[in-house]
Image (cartoon, rainbow over all chains, first blue to last red; front, side, top):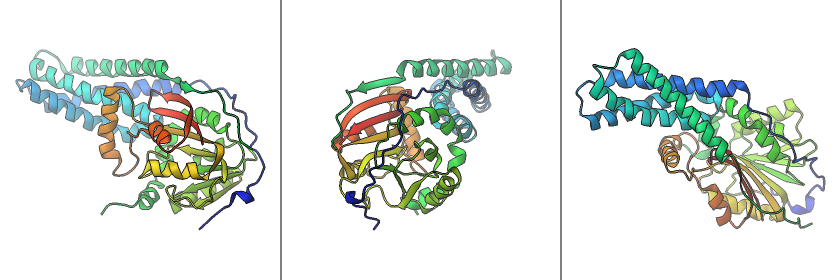
Length: 156
Length: 199
């Protein structure tokens, strides 16, 4: 046991300065977020189009699309998390994979004959871009103090 | 066969720095701002590979713990490399090897997503803090926004097998353990937060 008693406490205080400013987000992360979203959208649209056939039942196509989208998203997590951070990749990626996969699945079951591959992939890219834009906007709205009580008096 | 917490984090120590590379750079400023509130004798719970030691103010009276010997070994190497003065102790956050009312500040960084019984762990921190001592936390929690919470619940089903839970109510657990909440601040959406509480 590594027991330490409070009698042995060192009275030194840390040299602290709690008034530090947070540096602005580097451009690398901003661009990376959008690129990751676009790539996730394109690959989800591609994978769903490969799997879902024309004339599929729309509900089945939606569920299969969602599953395929989530698999694409989770595969890309391993690539993007080290570069961009876990939650910043996971939240938009899951929305693109899950909801995008559902939408693309429904579309491909009904309109595969009328929507070209290039259009399908472009819509995937646009969807990814818009989701990242929306999440980043939402983050700016939510970021900051949720609750703050006046500083307590410290007991010596 | 399921891993024990120690085995799991020993294995994760191999890829930990790689997987947290982006996160560290993205949220380093927020961590530095939180760490600047450290006062007096301080315990850093779950030091991991020691990435967060760089945010500790100079001349800090710091003890850092972890449940994983491999994490401790990596943290020790980084502390030596960066010239950080810290005493590293191998112990379980749910059964801390410190006397009551030992510390002025307890600091946690993405810790209470991983501790098997978070309320028990927080009660241990409550025990070792001096009256009026501060708990400073940088944690991720379950979102209160329905669609995001569903995603976190789904991801937790997978992530808890090899890493942390993503859907803990850490603010609620802090209150349940007997702390008084002083400040709660969102760092990313309402998922990554800084939480400040006092004993």
